[in-house]
Amino acid sequence: MAKLPKKDLKRIIEILNSGEELPVDYKHILFPPEKKEYELVYAKKEREEDIIANAMAVPLQPIKTFGKNGNDWTNKLVFGDNLQVMKSLLDDPDVKGQVKLVYIDPPFATKQEFRGSQDQKAYQDKIAGARFIEYLRKRLLLFRELLSKGGSLFVHLDLKRSHYMKVMMDEIFGERIENEIIWHYPDNFQGNVNRFPNNHNVIYFYSMSDATRIKRVEIPLNKKTKRDVRIWDKESQSLVAARDEDGKIIYKEFTHKFADDVWVIGQSSVTKKKSSEFIDYPTQKPEELLRRVIECSTEKGDLVLDFFLGSGTTASVCLKLNRKCIGIEQLEGGMNTALPRLCDVVKGKDNKGISKVVKWQGGGEFIYCELKKYNEAFMDKIQAAKTSNNLVKVWKDIAKNSFLNWYVNPEMPEEAINDIIEIGKTENGLEKQKKLLAELLNKNQLYVNLSEIDDKDFNVSEEDKKLNKSFYGEAYNG
Ligand SMILES: C[S@@+](CC[C@H](N)C(=O)[O-])C[C@H]1O[C@@H](n2cnc3c(N)ncnc32)[C@H](O)[C@@H]1O
Image 1: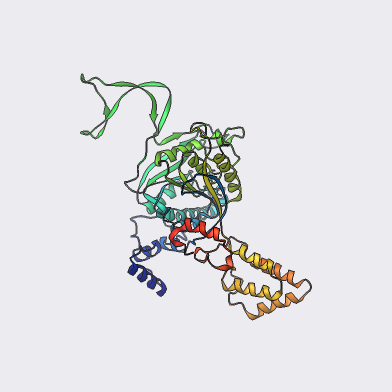
Image 2: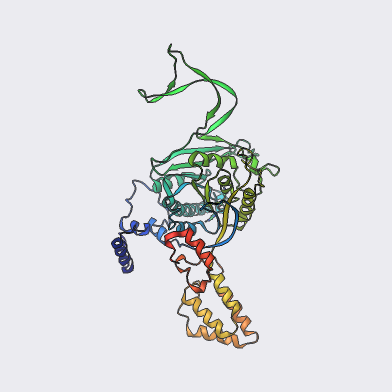
C-alpha cells in the first residue's frame, strides 16, 4: 500500500467516524486492486489510483439553455476536456453509478500512426500508440465509476488499436466483453489499395455486471420469408425447431430477423456531400448506428454519456429517443457543429438521420456549458488595474495561488517585483506591465478547481454556482 500523507490519514479517519462512504481515491489506496493474471505493459502506464486522484474536478460555466422539457433533468453539452468533467461527475449523485450507457467513438489515430511500419519511424509509432492507449485508459477508468450496475459500455474503434484496447478493457472491467460488433459499411468504395478495402469498424460491447440487459434488434426483411419456428429446448439447452402434435416442423412467414453481431449500416449518408445526413464533420457517424446502440441498451429516460461527442450524433439521437444525455467535446470545430445541430433538433427543424422514422417533431432541453477558466478571472483583473501598484498586487495574488506555469516562482522574488515596478516607470509603463502580465498568465486551459468556486477571486456568479450545485451535488460546498 502507498504511504499516505498525514492529512489524508486524518481525513480517512474523519470519514470513517462519520459513517460516510469512502471516496474512490481512498478506497483504491487502502485496498489496491489485485494484479491481474496478465496485463498490458507499456511505458508510462500510471497507477489506477493515481489517475483517479490526479484528475482535477472543474466547475462548469453555464452559457445558454436551449429548449424546455419541464422536468428536473437538463441534458448537458460541455465544451472542454472530458477527463476533468468526468472527475467532477464522480461527485454528482445524479450521475455517478446512474449511467446506463456510455458510447464512445474516440479519435483512432495520431499523425505518427499513418507513417510506415518499419525503421525508426515505426518505433515512434509504437510510442504514439502507447500514449493513445494510456489516454483512453484514463477515461475508461472514470467511466467504470460512472456506469450503473446494469450499465453497458460501447467502445467504437478501428483496426489499428482495437486489439490493445480489448486487452486493456479486460483489465479494467474484467472479462466482461459481450460482443465484438462489426459495423460493416459496404457502401464505402475504396480505390486501388494494396490490400482489401477496409469497410468496417469494431464496437466492443462490455456489460458492467450480470444485471446488464440487452434488447434484441429487429431488422425488417426485404420480402416475407417462410422459416421454421425455433424454440428453446430445456433438455438439450439449445434452440430447436418447434413441432406440432404430429411431430411436423412448424413454419411461419417472417417479416423481420434479429440482428447478430455484424451490423450492416451504410456510411455514405454521412460521407457524401449530397447525402441526407451529411454535416461536414469528418468522423460523423450515422444516426441509425447510434439508434441501434441506444435502443438495445437503454429505456426511455435512461442516462447516456458520449464524451467524444464530435458532431453530436449521440446527443441528437438521445433527444429523438427521449433519453437523458451528457455530451462533451473539446474541439471548437466539433462544438460548432454539435451546438447548431442540437438546436435544430430541439426546435423540430432537424429532418436528418432518424427524424423521419421516429416522427421527430422537436422538444427536449439542453444547457451548453464550458469549463471555468482561472486565467479569464485574472485577465479581467489585469485589464481593470488602474495603477502599477494595483498590478503588482494582482500579480502577487496570481503567483501565490500557483495559477501560473513553472517559470513564475510562487515565492515571487524581490527582483522580479522590482523589475515589474521599473517597467511601470517607463513610457506607457502601465500598458507594458499589463501586456507582460497577460503573457505570463498562462493562456493554456487552466481551470478553476471545484473546491475554489466560492473564492471571490474567480467571480463565479450566484447563478453559475447554482448550476454547479445541481451538477456536482454533494461535492459542492457553496
Ligand atoms: C471520432 S470523433 C467523434 C465523432 C462522433 N461520433 C460523431 O458522430 O460526430 C472524436 C471526437 O472526440 C473529441 N475528443 C478527443 N479527445 C477529447 C477529450 N479529451 N475531451 C473531449 N473531446 C475529445 C475530438 O475532438 C473529436 O471530435
